[in-house]
Image (cartoon, rainbow, N blue to C red; front, side, top):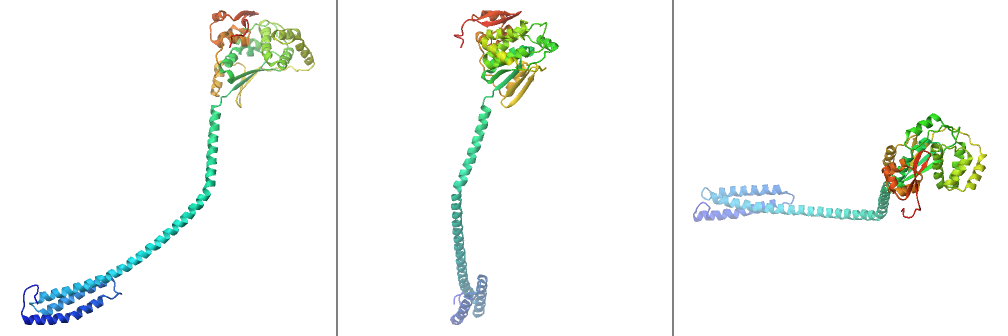
Length: 398
């Protein structure tokens, strides 16, 4: 045969043919051995390599030195064929593995589908429960929003202050702080409620009275003699408050002017009835009510006039002097807004008459010479002090 390395004679070719025919069975045997299904992929490869080596050796032995390369080639070819068949066996094994993989994937798909079904069921159950949970959540949110709105409403709600002055006609301190009380009343408007309560009858301390009278700018006479107690004037003030709360304020003011400036004895019943008539009470009714209450025993006590204030539910107590700056600061700190509208001079005098010069200038922040320039008020005197009263009707004041 023609070897890969050169040519040979006829005898050699016949021997080669005989040798070639003798190698086929061994190749078939090798192929059969390599087809064993129990042999794994690595064993098949090793078997193919061994068959190739055996074929190469047989070719070398048959061909001699001259045909050795051809025999080696033939043996190598046979070995390659065997190795190829071995690889085919390995492919079938891989197919088996792929089948197993496919089975595993199917199992995974089944598991995933089962999980999806169970998840779907749990989501369905969750959806069945969601409406109740959603309603509860919405209710909580609405409740929280409502609470926040209430808090905001409380914060935005206007706070009002109330000041109750416990006083009587002989209270020099209560008389002295009238400009401050009126200024607060004017500046805070509807947010400030000023009222007066009548003290129980008391004994007057002369030293305290003189000290208080000299402390303020409000007009006050140096009264020579003070009454032993305030029983009669206190009873008259209570009668006035019960009969007409609005006229009660005017009556309290008129009694103060009579006692502290005019130096009149207001502990006499006749004086009390006359002054009640001047401020608007019906004289006979007032006198009758005074007699009806005269038999009631009222025990005199010694008590310092005081003031009780409140802002909302918070109590604020004052005793003695009331400074405007301090009172204003307390109200502002307690969120009471000064929303009053400054009145004109005529409006101010009409509301509080008779008004002292000190009250008008301090509350309205005007000069004393401006008082005489108004055409609707006129000057009047009580004792030694100057006062101002409204002149004419109230038309055109608003």
